[in-house]
Image (cartoon, rainbow, N blue to C red; front, side):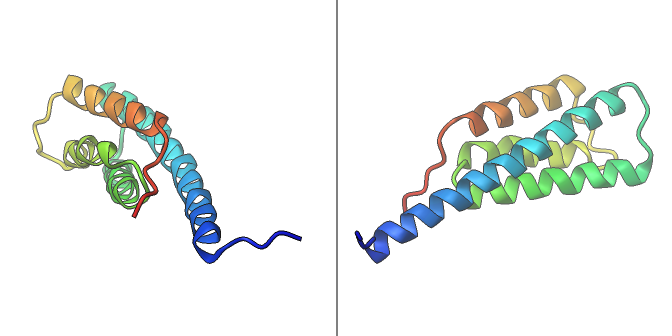
Amino acid sequence: MALVSGQDAFSVELARIAAAARHSNLSRAEQLRHALDRVQDGGLEPEQVERARRLAHQLAGSSGTLGHPAAVSPARLLESYFTPGSGIPDATADEALAAVLAALQGQPDTTL
């Protein structure tokens, strides 16, 4: 029976956590895609806009902490977009979401 060193076990666990975070973040991005579509059609209630803002905030924090730092800035832009009165153009938000999705497609950086 082979023993796994502490560092190897840590690396395996970190990779598992990063993969789970990526899955959650892709789900958040999909929810934000639907919210963007609805905002652009004029169909989101204020509480739904706030929920989308919180999703973008969670996406930014999780991405930065768990291996996808390139997703942080565009996710923060989305957070601002869903803040009432931001004035951020719809096209800019669409580009930010595309940048988030592109960043999440890469392998997470799990180096310490």
